[in-house]
Image (cartoon, rainbow, N blue to C red; front, side, top):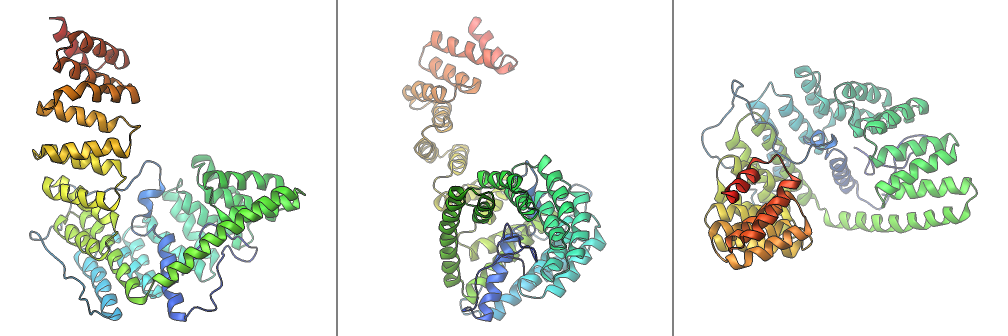
Length: 481
């Protein structure tokens, strides 16, 4: 399986670090290893959606007109997991998810990738690799398959094969920092330190804020006894990620060899503190993870990964059913619920989207974007009180942001209710964020209360900030008539 700590612990023999496991049962160790693998391939079907700049959590691209739609008949549902289901039965359900997906889209590399991941999670690495190789037969540029086969090769000690596969992946995605990171590790494991450093430097030029690559560069320089240069890279890694325990350990070593005992002691103490916290979390996780709960989590992952592929191929009904199944198994599964509300919005199901955002807001009550969506959807559905409550909550969650005050002011203006409160709300929005948009809102707020002079003044300021906006110009011309 993949290393639990993908970031750190570079040694001369292999790039890997771990914790003592002598007291763990073999079965539990396997399950924990699977969970560690999930962290590193969390990366799974979606890792490339997040590695590149400018890509956030979003639905995959649906099938375009003219592509095979794969749309199933109407809404569908998937069976719930029986309360008395055994581990083997749950594993079987997960494998059925992948098998159905491949049967639906046998020429889809995405489908084979998901089934490969399901097999890998449950210990069948040979079967997983066969599916990932099938991905490459279907699409020689399918980066996820290169990555997964490379990670399997590294875990088996075949760093040469891993490096070869990762270089092929980087021809398609040369900017991806995780690919560069793993390629550098494979090269380091072979003793090719200069080549590894060249890979890291090339990637850091285009993605300068990936802490793991600064860390590896520092490790290489430490091995080459270039201590001053190593300190620079390691300090940068720690600046990007302040709780990077392995960077602290490496810096303690670097400063000890530079003769700076005070700094060496400082980083040793920080490392000890961070590792104590990490070990406590690891022990807590080991206590929490039992066989059944772990395989249920993997089943939810299978549903979620499959949903993305169904959506990608245009089968929105199946995608919805699989996201619903994932969310039902995982009470804290934000990703599936976000995908569902986006799907509901795309399909014009505002009430379903509203309920989805309300559930998400209960899970993450401080998320401003959820509250704004709740307010917007309530307003769209004519639920004035619900919109008002959501927008007021925005200003409580983020009192130094203008967006909640502005949203509430717009709600009152459009509903023609509580107009006396609108100018103060708009003034607050302008005070916090004096943008042209907020100044235009202030102009409308003042006009609604009969203050035409104040409205004109705010409008002029809006035009100064955004002189090419036709709406502001049109409003100014109406004032002049």
